[in-house]
Image (cartoon, helix red, strand yellow):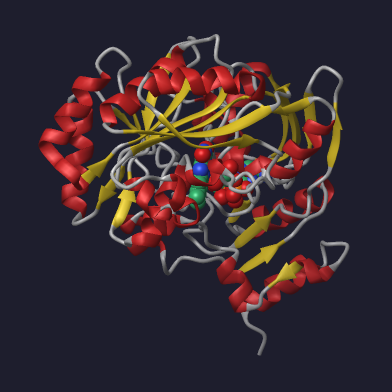
Length: 459
Ligand SMILES: Cc1cc2nc3c(=O)[nH]c(=O)nc-3n(C[C@H](O)[C@H](O)[C@H](O)COP(=O)(O)OP(=O)(O)OC[C@H]3O[C@@H](n4cnc5c(N)ncnc54)[C@H](O)[C@@H]3O)c2cc1C
């Protein structure tokens, strides 16, 4: 006899122009139900048995509307998915149902003459960056997963990355100009949101609408160079990186500082990481490279590598070792490594780092990244490596950080609110109430939401 899942899949496949885009093969469903949640030993334990019943791959808004209408009527959960590179289990369905894989919606409609990319959610950030650069523009900021990650997934679950030191994070400076979103209702609606309204949906983990089109502001293209510097002490390395990050005369897209022994984990570029030295990786304007190297030597740095940046195919590609890729190299070296996501106070960062070292020693290794906040202040951010022993010890470290004024966006939780980027004005929750009254979009990830039973009963 046909199982309930098979019967649903059969009905869903009829809603698609090509029924083969409803996938039920167990290995495929399992793979497309998972992301990089295993970065966290805590989430690894909690999420490893979670998966969808089937995956549907729509190619346009009309198919999405048909799928959502059907799932609303049958009470089936739907979890949107881009490329599944998120690392908090954001795209892992907690209650089965459908994974809505948007990777086939990958059309770039235009890059306008004034530097706005208009595209579908499944466009890979790397493809957009490469295309934008051919017409004089580039992404303002991007995750180190740029080659695989999608634009929709970056809006749904990301925050910033390479370029944030120059242009701020994704949610600042009107970088997301507008978006189109489809609602999860009896009759799914298509809304166009612009200006402040985009914040209803950004970083809501796909819990309050399916993003189907994006207007993303770009930055003028710069001819970049890559440069690696080594310093004898972490203090000297951090000091130089902080000075360059804060100096507007240096045009930079990346300033990443690693405490030794982190660079020893970077297998393919180990030769540019001298034993025992603390390293900084930069993307700096090519036209400033010579002057920059002089400046670095004057500060006691040794240039261990420099070269022209030729785009994402450049080898070595230094960004492959920065942002959350640093953690990946460390985990490859020793599975006990995990990480935190912190923002230090620019006025007391050194004292805060010292307190952390005094308390935790080499249990925490500093990996610093900078971003310009919405007020224009340069924030010394960090994605420090943490040598994991127990969840209690990890929570102690988080509490200690918070106690000394270091902000922590906790990457070991699986809900929007506790992750640290939930908006205090509750606009994401308000949008969920409007656009997903039954709570069927990525259920369980927005804890403050209660399904609106009365409203549903009235329909
Ligand atoms: C090695 C590594 C490095 C990373 N570095 C960074 C970094 O530097 N900066 C950073 O911000 N992140 C980083 N990340 C996290 C992640 O790669 C990025 O946030 C990436 O942009 C997510 O894109 P994705 O397509 O993989 O999204 P997914 O993982 O597929 O989805 C992310 C979230 O968005 C939702 N979503 C996806 N598409 C849609 C849509 N169309 N509509 C509504 N919701 C949607 C999903 O439901 C999910 O909740 C890193 C992760 C790894 C593993």
